[in-house]
Image (cartoon, rainbow, N blue to C red; front, side, top):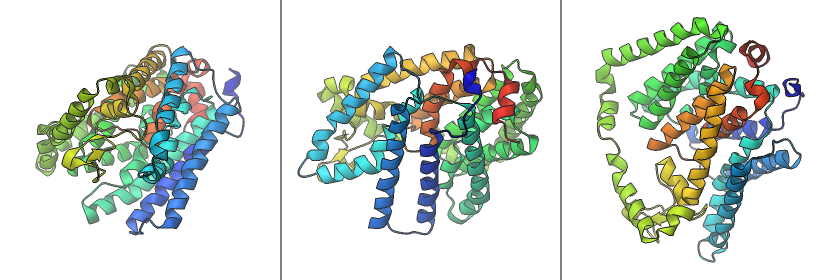
Length: 402
């Protein structure tokens, strides 16, 4: 339990904080309609490169746990994905565009999986929970006025993603903090439904449902009074949706279409990959593309560099090798976190990992956001033996919002 006595500094928190500050900065730029001028691009490159080197420095300085065999293979494959992208970056015609994509998007995004072998301490967890709570407050203060003016829940919804961790650990926090947490999630679900953002409804609604499930199945004394509170919240939310169903008609129409809106691009993906069956196994690298026809992102070649389905996106970049290894690692973490732990935090981590796989059905592609970082932080938490052995009382004292 030596890790329970934490140092004042938590290196792992630094790149997360930097990225979230940049997210808020990007939102402000969008609201003010400031064009993507050179100085802003340079700031973006600087943030991504700095955050990536912060994570690499954490690993280099031994602030990590030794990976197991499957994780070793996973990281070797990650290196292979990077190497496969070198010819695209060095291409004399499109290399400059590929390099800009790599520095501004992919560099940090493909460094995030290193989080799952980082050492987790209670100081880091406390800071992560406090950051998530602050972002939730900013979301509450800005989301509704913005929606009333623009009829869109974006771009503020990204600020509320960390609230899922707060929801999973609800019994750790003071009652006034829990009111903010529950209201944040409820508002996020309602606004997402009003704007017919199906993937957001899956994420926040699924997060609420899994939190209820996790707390209902917990034997902790701290969980008892929150079981019926969360059940009541679910009941009231569903009742409100039924009563005011006409307001959510557009959402229900989109749900009724299923994947029809993305069926054509998925068909193009399958057609292209079936022409080169080996790509299903190995993928096409970080800068990998597929034939997108009129739905292209590269008009000169009718190619598309992404697809709105998390599973197919991972296959596009790293093949079944990448996706399969990640699933194996995730299943092991979910088992340890939910069945081999003594506290709600680790069970919540397991639920966050599971939620990611539901989220990937409708969208859920990798991104430089707290939602994606939280997946690999959750894997690290579930694999941390001393953390699994902590009681809810111990963790509430150390990481709970006061």
